Length: 443
Image 1 (cartoon, rainbow, N blue to C red):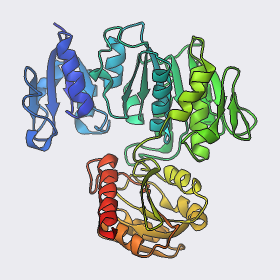
Image 2: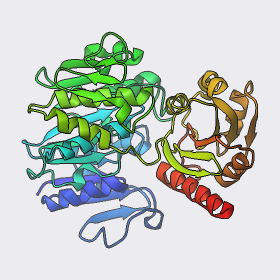
Image 3: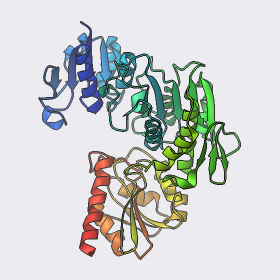
Image 4: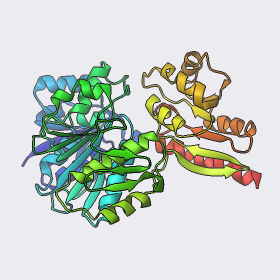
């Protein structure tokens, strides 16, 4: 019987363990946290061998270990396992090794825009009646799908740098790199190491596969020599395989009127371009009219420039998914007027000062919360007005009392959420609830 261990019992770790057990592996789960501190039940663990509250020497008896993406590769247990010669792989790598060979992979990474792009690709393929699944960083673990069977023609994967850290055989048929901007610098030794983790998406591709890249990204172009596959480019400038003419985007097979889509802002034009190149790269005939309709029927994502409510002429926008500075730049430039912006959260090591120019142009006032509020106050010293708050509710209420009709209040944190929330969805849901309570009180 084949043996495999899972290090960390987060969502993807549990899915990988259950899939391995289903395929006949002897499975062992090792989790540093105590069971009561984990989001898992004894019922879910039934039939599995496991330990909680620390890592024992039993781990060393398993030649192959799936490492949950939340575990930094610098932790002592990782170093010990590497020194012992255990093979450490990601859940994505394990999923690729067991997937049915006929199922093709479309993989998307980047610092920003991943979720919108994979959701758009999935939506269009689904509308074209193609057997497709969506998984990865967006919420559903790759190994939670019946990937060992021929259940799908395509699986669309959103991949973070953490999920790409331990891939070896992983080879997507189409790989998309949207952009690389500083992020997760508390986890990586340098911006270069973070960038190289992103480039792992291409490393096993061959000339028969397709790489789709943003042509105007300086960091991508610095490492473009590492891409072994056929490259297709998108940008708003000259060197692009998608042409922009007023509101029309065109390729050899597709014509999309972006004014008819729900996706607004320059960053979303780039996401649409990347999606068009994915579709162009598929070995099939596209119904151009049905494809164009699919683009216009896509409604966008929750927590990403999501309209929440209009209260007495004041618009509330939930952009909780903006967990880094580049996302906030995109959000600010999507509006034609200055906005009241709520920022702050847990610190990932970013320099918030690079937002100052955008804030001076697009922001009316800053409402700062969370672990980073003192750091932001210092780095935004030149910007006024700004104010700190103990929590999100206080910030929202103050922003509303100061607002006038036609004002926009946006939650766009530039930070992770873990100082006060389980994830960015939890933070965004809390924002929605606060706004809903305000609305009820105004009626």
